Image (tube, rainbow, N blue to C red; front, side):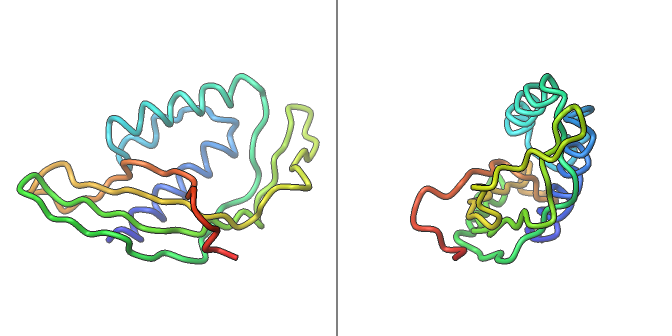
Length: 137
């Protein structure tokens, strides 16, 4: 279920990036309210530049780190290796400005949660770079 939720979230994130950060509220069904605030702020800053992304992300690893069920719902954390090899960064003039030093496959920790103990729908509650040793290389 977490992998399916992440794929849906990544697909919409890619669409927003490919359209220069516009209408980021499309993420609402896929993320928690708190994480939506982070995403909206990030995409608003991105939209100001006039830049966009081209392509789509994928992932090479999706490994469960923690699965916790509480009276309030489920909390799941996974390790993901995000693959950017099929994406490019495009400036407002349409020029590819993808940094040559960009790491194309990098580790993140993704947190998911359900809204309550009755819900079966996982939503992304966080998507942060992994700060430890790169487990993707």
